[in-house]
Length: 283
Image (cartoon, rainbow, N blue to C red; front, side, top):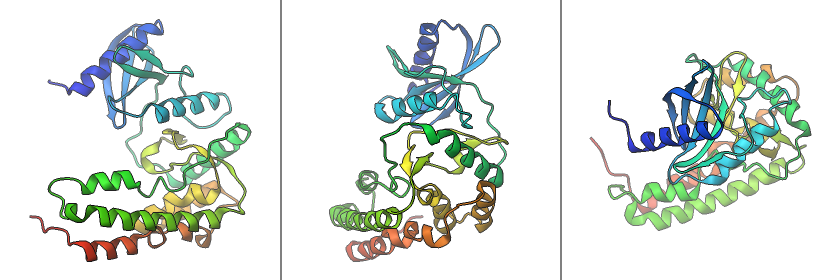
């Protein structure tokens, strides 16, 4: 079976990191492939570890930051997947972090159990010293990604890209002001920052993908759940069950309202698209 070039290079990097750590693997396989390549590695003693390899062209900072945060949390009781060391190995074929092995559950996560785990994460991380502010807008869009999408040769809005991106940027700026004003008086705590269903697994639930961790408010933390209900059609019961699992102090619907799709410029963006060009019919 032919493997991709990214996977081939990733496997080389994973094996090099294992050797640098004094570990001998008899089998390495690809588990997932996103901004980083996650592998499983079965060692000659029968143990398993999970090498994570930064993709070619990937950004170093989030990769390094996630491993550093997880390492700082490793002995706090936080329900996370833990790295085996603080700093990734620099191999000839890329940066590699070695993490504990965790079997991923293919079943949908239990929302109440997920809420309980996020509460546990907040309590365990309460003493963590962090100067990093969680970026409350990352879960909505970034202007760079939006501009890149409109730059595709076959995109119907390519010719009016600059105007639409400008309007979108203005809408995001307005949304950030609304969000900042809404959370200004709320107490701060250390957040996971990216709580959605592809960043947790199991029951009890463990959390991963910690690159967006940082100081923020509970409204920030719950905003992606509200967005899932309002934009992506998640059942309302998901948010309600998560709240029950989390317990006291969860933000109200009114406190989450600044994060709603309309308030982040969706209506303004739609109006700009109507004014600057209509999407090309497909199929």
